[in-house]
Length: 524
Ligand code: NOJ
Image (cartoon, rainbow, N blue to C red; front, side, top):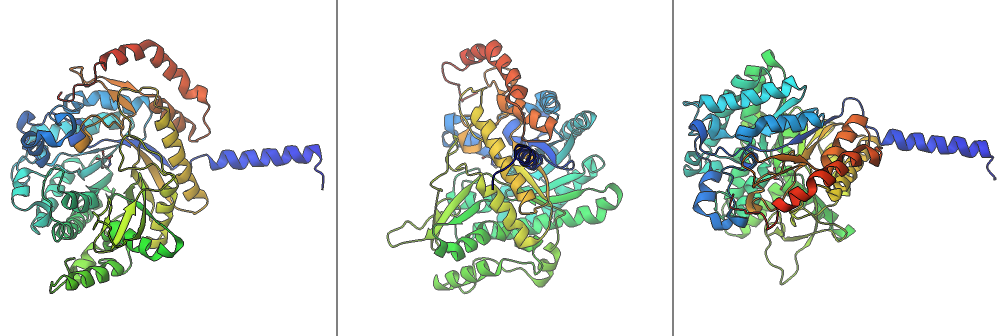
């Protein structure tokens, strides 16, 4: 059948409309950006702050971290926080996710002694954000465990459940009048599985048999305790919602025959940190419970190395989240281990318990952080999996971002990354009918990237680490992101964000390039 010209016009318009509206974000979708305290604050021993395991670690083992970097000064947000608020306001962010440094508020970690300067710091930040119309989203724990608590066993000691609850209560008492969206723990699975299995990172403890699973159990109970305290003592007066933000690694099967193994992998990676909270039956994912018991018995243990929950604990944890939060960056592929394969380290290279090997997707691309292959499709699949597993919880993407190195204001790759991942989020919403609350670009400013020091950068704003004030300069990605926010759509014209960037490039770029040559002094 031949098409008449007017029919062709109508069809084009229709396609365009579909295209345009599917690139638009609904009015209740929120855009924000994030940082974490140790990564940006500095002021490591300022005004009565106590030491965290990261303060101790970087001073005792400087050689562990690239460029012998420390977070002693970092982006100096402890003093320069107004600049962070300005950066967020310029982009018209709807929310800013930051975290509270536990020993800045409670110097020993215990709730008997409160540091007024630390309390004021976060209070001022919250007020300034609200004054700009930016919602503060607060993470209560993003890895700065007070040293005293680590010396008592840290997350492997069951008493930490109460200690964390006491700390959370202090934080709510101070800020719940103004903070309405909370996250208890950032990436509990990274803390328990990656840190204890690798033996690098602040505890420097490599113990794969028990530590990851004890830590897992106590983090779930600590989260639930913090939730229950909020729910009972604060929500009636202040309202608000609260969740936990695991590292949501999407796991693909190597071949269609490996789908059951991939599903087990997902339960092992994310299910152990979600099933106790979001599933109807609660407790550990049954498939993981089974594998862990079998493997432990084979090893000659008399019980599973995955510690059991009591019936009471299962009930206590069930339903302790008001939304589903996830940090989503990447995808790995899983296959059964073959003879001759290394045992593997969960969740980077494999699992001895699952007898599985993990590797990176072939078609992934890379930023600077090799462990985070770029694979946008994984975002949609992960979100749809969460819906299919746990039902219609609204999802907040609490982190997603691209890593680069060196001075790079024209960060086209970060622009593409944000665009491609947001596109997958739209597909999850419109095609898979996933409910989504919003998206958080990691990170607002460059930051101390843990073992990678300052060499790996995620910032929408570049930090000049050679400048005493740690000046912040917007990257192209920040202009792009503000255009998306302004348009509430991915359908943004290049002219929207490139005009600003070209100004930056021509005026300031040479200046900035000069500052970075010779290469950045990482010791700063
Ligand atoms: C997740 C962590 O929460 C954050 O601290 C880190 O900087 C990013 N991933 C990037 O690696």
